[in-house]
Length: 79
Image (cartoon, rainbow, N blue to C red):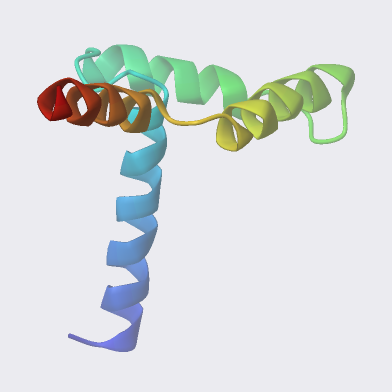
């Protein structure tokens, strides 16, 4: 695999992780694309852009729902 293909594969993997983190794995693909197209219209540096970025930053800092669910399952298995 070339370095460029590896970079592209990693980028897709990371972007897919964002979809999972947002809880949108079962969302319709057209719905997701529509949302992304709307987000692409927001001007970088605008108030709306900064608001959306702040929401994302907070979500990245919070424990992922999957991790919390896994810890809950592990704790239940110990008892």
